[in-house]
Each structure stands twice: as C-alpha cells, then as structure tokens.
Image (cartoon, rainbow, N blue to C red; front, side, top):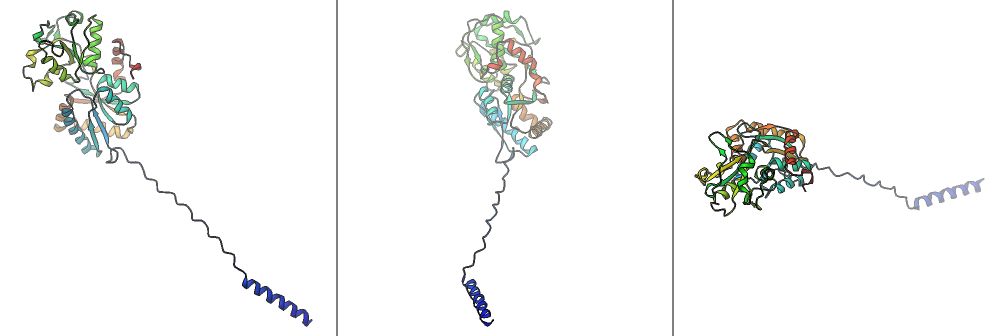
Length: 331
C-alpha cells in the first residue's frame, strides 16, 4: 500500500513539474476592426469649391457683356448666397457646348441656340426676356444710304411699304453682313426670307454680333465690308454712342413682324431643381430694383423677365424648319 501511494505521489509530482516547465500557449489577439473612412460630401453647387457659371451670348463686345454680366452675377450672389462667375463664349455654338459640357450652368441663350441646346439635351428654359413689354421681336435689313438702295420701311408709320419680295430684290448679287450661323435674327431667318423671295446673294461676311453688323454697314458706304446686313430691331441704337449720325447714314430697308422669341435664361441639366428655382426667384427680385433693372438693361436691353417652359418655342421650331433649318441634324 505504501508502495502504491509512493508511486502515485511520484507521478503527480512529475505531472506538476512538467506542467510548470511547459511553454504556455499564447492567447490569440483579435485583429483590429477596420474603421471605414469618413465620407466627405461633394461640394454643393454655388459654393466656393463649386461655383455656378453664367454664360452670356456673344451678341456684343466681350468687355461690355462681362461688365454687365458681372453686375447681374453679383446681385444674384447677394440674394442667393451662391458663388456665381460669368464668361462669354466665342460663338453661339461654343455657348451651346458650354451648357452641355458642364462649363456653364446658366445660359443667356438666343432662341435658335436654345432650341439646338434643348434638342441635344443640354438645357432647359426657365425665363424669357421681355423688351418693351414683349417676349417676341423682329429683324431688319439695313444698308448704308450711300449705296443707293431703295428704302421700303416708313419709320413715321412703323411699317413696310412693300412686301419682302419687292423690297429685297435689290439685294440680289450683293454681299450681306451676318452675325453668327446660329443667330435667328442675324442670319437664319433673314437668309430664309431672302431665299423664300428668290433673292440670291453673295457669300456673307461673318462679323459676330448685331452691333458689329450695324458698325460694318455704317463703315461701308461703297461696300467695303458688305452691302447690307441683318440685325434685331433696332441694333443701330447700340452704336449711336460711337456713331451719333448712324440713323442718318444707315437706313432700315425692310423690317419683319415680331416673329422671333426673345433670348432666355436657361439652365444646364445637371443643376438641381431647387438651385434653379432659387436663381429664378432671385432674377425676379432683381427686375424690381433700380440696380437690377440697370444691369439687365445694360446686358441685352432687358426690361423684364417672365417664367416660361419649352412649349414657348413650339411655333418658332415650326417656323425655323419651314426656313430650311434642320434642328435635329445640327451637330
């Protein structure tokens, strides 16, 4: 019995000794839980990091447009709190592409430029410009009186004395001054009226901007630049400061009815609806202040704005198509 007890004691002592000498198995440390990075929200439209760009149609000199546009942008910024910049693209086509490429979110678009931008899915109209209380306007054919053209417009009565075919026949074989290939009143509609009247003219001089057309005609007593031009009614007033006798030297040969929608304020597709509405509300407010009225008057002779939607241009689309301009094929 003593031997058995001694044997068990020895075994127990050995087990204890072995256990004490064994290397302990480390307890595994759990891997740290990955902490996802904090999401940084993208900058908001109108912030300093994501300013809104307002593009102006190049229908006058860039310097004049930028000065007037900056005045409007400053007032919009004061009302909305948005950071708004202005620029003037080099052509109507460049203006359209700016709306589609994200380089402009607000565009002061001429009517034909708008329907092309709308067709391409680049822009939505928000407001139409008012001039003298009207949202449509006409165009005029003008010429230097020294060239001897017969005048078929009576300014005292404010109407033509002959139809387009009769009045414009004298331009056959003559050189016109045009503004831009996408100008409704400075090229597309006047050229369509000439074609409808059967009047074939020479290739035109592209001089960019209605005031420039009026200036070119003024400086062409012998057809130095062109024999006649087409502008909105009445672009001569835009150069009267530099040429006080412009109405004496440049005559309106024939004038159309008010068939062309005025310019508009459009918005790019990527600008959120609430931002658009805030800008529309701010523009509406600007039209009620003296400073706002002065800025709008300076940029495009604007005396008011009214909210419109795309249907405002339905009749004009039909008319432009009748003039031979294929909106859907424009690239």
